Amino acid sequence: MSVVTNTTTIGAIEAPSRRNTELMMLAFAVAVPVFAYINVGLALDGKLPTGVLGYGLGLGLLAAVAHLVVRKFAKYADPLLLPLAVLLNGLGLVLIWRLDQSQRLIQRAEYRWGSFSPDAPKQMLYSAIGIALFVAVLLVLKDHRILQRYTYISMAASLILLVLPMFFPARNGAKIWISLGPINLQPGEFAKIIIAIFFSGYLMVKRDALALASRRVMGLYLPRGRDLGPILVVWAMSILILVFETDLGTSLLFFGLFVIMLYVATERTSWIIFGLLMSAAGAVGVATFEPHVQQRVQFWLNPFAEETWRQSDQIGQALMSFGAGGTLGTGLGQGNSDLIGFAANSDFILSTVGEEFGLAGMMAFLMIYGLIVERGVRTALAARDPFGKLLAVGLSGAFAIQVFVVAGGVMGLIPLTGMTMPFVAAGGSSVIANWALIAILIRISDTARRPAPAPAPSPDAEMTQVVRP
Amino acid sequence: MSELTLTVMRLGFLAVLWLFVIVAVQVIRSDLFGTRVTQRGSRRSADQRPQQTRQPAAPPPQRQQSGSRQRRGAPTKLVVSEGTLTGTTVALQGQTITLGRAHDSTIVLDDDYASSRHARIYPDRDGQWIVEDLGSTNGTYLDRTRLTAPTPIPLGAPIRIGKTVIELRK
Image (cartoon, rainbow over all chains, first blue to last red; front, side, top):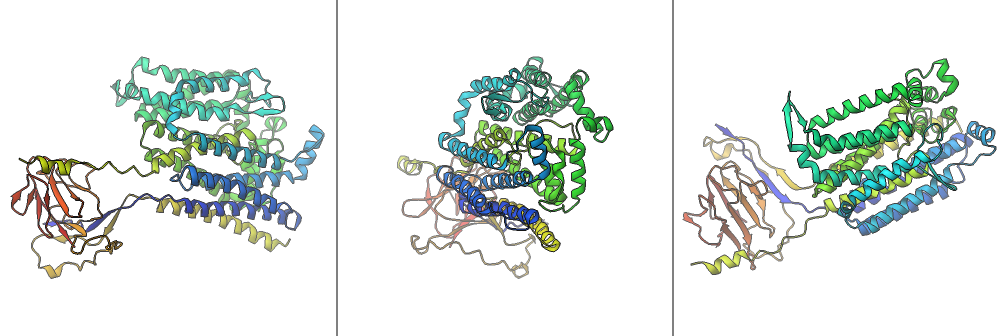
C-alpha cells in the first residue's frame, strides 16, 4: 500500500504592497509610447520629432502624479491596472498625433470645415483631466462601499444620462451627444460606470430571490415570472435606446452588462440564455423597421458593395488597412489608414493599429485590454464584500464589452456602432470616464488586497486556566 | 531614413510592446501570494520499508533567523509525524496554529476522529508553546494523557488527534 507523503512546509506570506513593481512598470509604460513617437517622427520626416521631450515629460508627469496618489492613498492596490492604462493612453496619443500629420486628413478637414485643428493636443488635455478625475476619485472615495448608499440615486442619474441625448440633435446618425455651449459630452460613457453601481447595489439585495426561487425545467432553472421584471425593464430600456437614439453600442453595453452581472450574482446559466435570446429578438426586431440600424447592417454585410461604397467606404477601408498591415505591419507612419477619412482617429483608430503594427501589434493591444479585464475580475475574486465583487465584475465587464463592440465593429465581426476604444481613441468623454473607471477598480483592489487587521488578542487562554476546577 | 532603420524600428517596437505584455504577465505570476508551500519529498510506500531507502530529504529551508528574540531551545517548527498529512511542517513564527477539519484551519485534518475545530497551539507571553483542546469530541492527547486544560508542550512530545500525531521540533 502506498500513501502520498506530504513533505511540505507551509508558511504565511504577508501581502506585499507592490508599489515599486508598479513604478517600474509605469516607467516601462511611458518609455514604450515615447519610442513609438520617435518612430513616427523618423518615418515621416526622417528626423527626431521636436515635440518628443514635451510629450515624454507630459506623459511621465501624468503617470508620476497618478502613481504618487496611488502610493499614498491606495497602498495595496493592484500593481498592473495603472501601468496598463497609461500605456494605452500613451499609445493612443501617439496614434492620434500620427494621424494629425496625415496630409490627406488635413486637406479633407480644410475642404469640409475650412480649417484643420490637430486632435493630439486636445487629447493630451483630456488625458490630464482624466488623471485629475482619477486622483479625485481616489481622494474622495475612501471606501467603495460608500457607493452602495447611492444605489437608487445612481439608477436615476444613469437613466437621465441615457435619455438626455434624445433631446439633442443627432450627429452622424446617432443621438449620443449632449452639447452645452462649446462642450460636447457623450453621457453614455459616464452612464456605464453609474449603471454598474446601480446594478451591483440592486443585485446584491435581490440576488437570493433571483437565484433560489426558480423551477427546474429541462435542466434549466427558470425564474419565477415576477423575478423576470427587472431584466424585462432593462431590456425594454435598451431597446428604447436603440430605437430613439439609434445607438447600437450603448444599448448592447447596457443590456450585456446587466446579463453579466445577473449571472455573476446568481450563478444561474439560465439568465445568460434568456439574455442572449432577448437581445437576439430585440436586435432582429429593431433591425427590421429602424432604417439607421438597417443601414448599419447592410454596411456590415456588404462592405465592398457599390451601394455601400457610395454612402460610406469606412468599413471597407478599415478592412483593407487590416489586410495591408499583414502580420508585422507596415511600420508606424507608413500606413494608409488615413484613407478612412472621417473618424479615423476615434472609432476607427484600431485599423491604424492593425495596419501599422500588423497582426502582432494588434494582438498585443488586445492582450493589454485583456489584462486590464483580467485584473478587474481578479479584484472581484479577491474582494471580501459582495457589493465590491459585483462592482468590480460590472466595471471590467463594461470595459470588456466596449472593447468587443468596437473591435468587432471595426474588424467586421458585428455591425459597426458608434463607440470609442477605451483610452486609445480620440474623444474626451471616453478617456475621462475610463480613468474614473480605473480609479474605482484600483480603490476596490486596494481594499481587497489590504491585509486583514490582526485579530484582537483573545483572553480565553488565560481565562480557561483560571477557571479550571 | 533608410529602409533598414525603419524595418529595425518597426520590429523593435513590436518586440518592446510584446516585452511589456510578457513582463506584465510575469508581474501577475509573482502576484499570486498566499501560503508558501515548499515541496521537498515524494511518494514513498508505507509498508515499513527500511529507512535508508527513503529519498534523502533536503534539509528544511532556512527561515529568516529572528532568533535574537527567540529563546534558545525554543521549537521552530511543527511536524506532522503520523496520519495522512505525515511530513507536513509548519514554521512557528509566533502565530496561533489551529487544527481541525474546518477549511480555515492552519492544518486541515482529514481525519474521521477529528472535530472541525479540534485544538489550537499558540505561544504564551514567555514564548512557551501551549496546546489547548477546543472542546473536541474525541479529545486531544499529549503523550498518553487527555488534555483538559491548556498545557505547555515539551519539545518532541507527541500530540495525538485521532490518527494524526504532531510534535514540535527545533
